[in-house]
Amino acid sequence: MEGKKQEDCCVTIPLLLGSGDVGTKANIGTASFISTFFNGLNALSGIGILSVPYALATGGWFSLILLFVIASTTFYTGLLIQRCMDADPTIRSYPDIGEHAFGKTGRTIVSVTMNIELYLVATGFLILEGDNLSNLFPDMEFDIFGYHIDAKSGFIVLVVIIILPTSWLNSMSILSYVSASGVLASLIIIGSILWAGAFDGIGFQEKGTLVNWNGIPSAISLYAFCYCAHPVFPTLYTSMRDQRQFPKVLFLCFAFCTVTYSLMAVVGYLMFGSRVDSQITLNLPTNNISSRVAICTILVTPIAKYALMLTPIVNTMEARFQSSYNKRMHSFIIRTTLIISTAVVALSLPFFGYLMSLVGALLSATASITIPCLCYLRISGIYRRIGIEMVIVWFVVLTGIVVAVVGTYVSLVDIISHL
Image 1 (tube, rainbow, N blue to C red):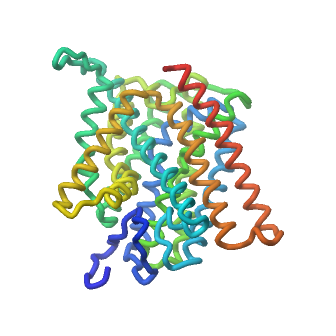
Image 2: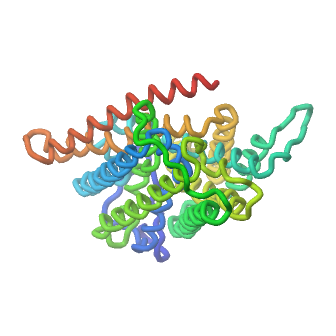
Image 3: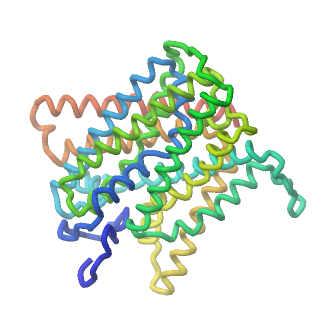
């Protein structure tokens, strides 16, 4: 920022600027390659790693190919986001891209889609915590003011209290250290589950099925949910000291996450077959040390990702409802209210697998596949001429639309049937 010397690896650019904020590429951040890499990994990896075995079991071995298709497609659309930002130096955020392509309507559509997606992802964190911690400590029930609070609900409230301080962080330099802990947590979870399968008597004897056509829509939706970090990419790009390295960072992040996702999917499916739950940790015997390590490590994931995921929503609300009186207290109220509301939704719709499938189909496929392509077509102008690039982009657009329509229908049917 002008007149201030930023610390190394720090950027003060918010994840989502208000509609009146205008920046220039002269305000390039100072985040290093490694710092951006960890932030990118943290945005892409996380709770999706627990649901990929369930996704593979839902669609069968054939659906593993679709995981690589989704990974390749979302990597390509990530590069399209960079090209859109390079087209105009005033583009600093994901909604800026939508506005540059389709005016105020485009900004509104992108903002609403992005914020709802991130909000539901944050809600999924809490459901995951409640499920796993109550599985580990099932007797943690109590009564308060005449109301019985079960273990799952109690743990959701406890996790909200723990993660609340992280919502006050807005420095990417600090978040990069938190992000590193989130990546480490994912590796520990994989190692613990591998240990449970190899040395704790579970084994890898399940064969599974080749393909389950009825489960393919749900499987694709869950795979799409694993790659739903595109709203964060503009911030990562503008935060870099050397923005020419962004494609390399993006490729490494996608490659690392795809390897870990596919490894977890195969291992989990071989361990539990069609019996695998929407979160593989729910299948683990809680009396084993490896299982307890995996479940306890999950607590790190919301702490590591909550600040990064909710900051765009917070910035939107602060820009819209900003007050000239006691801005710090105003920001505190917005952030606290936002997190409490996610807890309320998590307690009301405790269906992790179905909710994440809905997020993947309706929102992730839209925000991470369809919107980047449409914006690129408009901003670059390639829609005016027939060429191989235009054909590829339109094919990706149609793929995103099909995933969104079919996956959303299946997910809503599942949720309604379990209410």
